[in-house]
Image 1 (tube, rainbow, N blue to C red):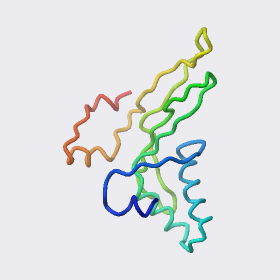
Image 2: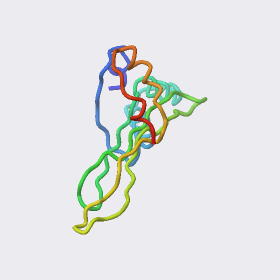
Image 3: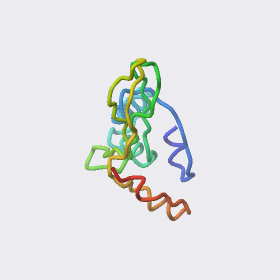
Image 4: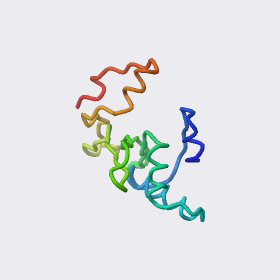
Length: 132
């Protein structure tokens, strides 16, 4: 999957089960190590970092609904660590009268680095979209 995503063709999508956006990276690294391929851990992390732009976390809440709970961007590498920044998150504000989870999906205030690439591709999103 990571090799296919890193061929220079934009537009890949996959799913993986993990507890958080950060855990997705650890899960991918673990799956690659379990495959028995003899690649150094740093090379695996660099492959993950160069292959994936966004990680979207969907969580099941206490009322049984599933909501996007986090959207994080993979920014790159700092030494041997993949760096991420959360762009959007779901903030639970309470429980409604019928047990439904209440909350808001909101921006964190971080403007994603991939925006320049989107603009070059002709996609223009309002900057207010990323304002908290």
